[in-house]
Image (cartoon, rainbow, N blue to C red; front, side, top):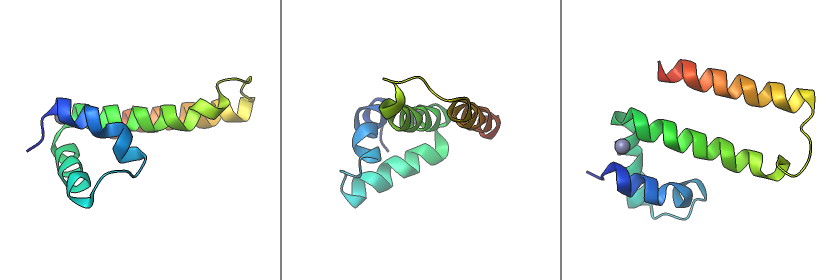
Amino acid sequence: MLSCREVVNDADQLLDGELHWRQRLSIRFHLLICHNCRRYVRQLRMLIFAIPYMHQRASDEEVSIIMAGIVSSEKSDA
Ligand SMILES: [Zn+2]
């Protein structure tokens, strides 16, 4: 099984769809049982989503969408 460090190192490639299916499967299996890596990958995904908006002021609607995502993410981790 992959270590947490290996998952963290490959997480950006996972989200970019650059990994071989066997690597993706190994990471997905790790994410099933590791709460911390699941949270890390989820936060990285949200960061990648937010990057295009970082150079401009967010609208109230965009802030609401991001905050709802954070709240829902925290609830699913509980
Ligand atoms: Zn882990």
